[in-house]
Length: 183
Image (cartoon, rainbow, N blue to C red; front, top):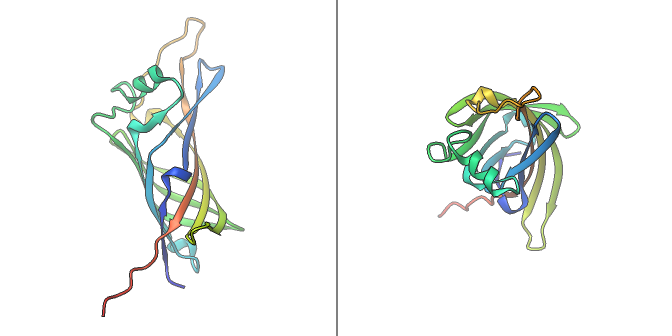
């Protein structure tokens, strides 16, 4: 079977993160604008690849003042680094719809290898006849590895913003129909 190409559907996909605040609660947020391409080799999943691009300005934690701070040079520095990208190096099947996607995550101009623990959530045809695929993935990063070091000490000890960031993706993708060769 040939490889198929799938475009990430931003309107039906979620890229979310969670980080400890004041060491006692968890703040969650996400990015509204995600795009990318999945090249899927159903016969040999290890021949698949993933490329994702996230518009950093689309960050939303449901609190505009915090979002502005996260867009600033203290954190994501959207003015100089408008995109977060992920490019897979390899896909490792783990059986029964589970796989690991190993790749390069670039945040704020810093690239590090991460492993996404992923699941194939299935396929379907929408009411307009378009083939859709669903995938979910999880990973955890240390924000300091990407130069995201801003913090504030708490009077009672500890720090304001946790260093561990849990990342969760719920992706829906549309199959790209091959273009017929012209005669």
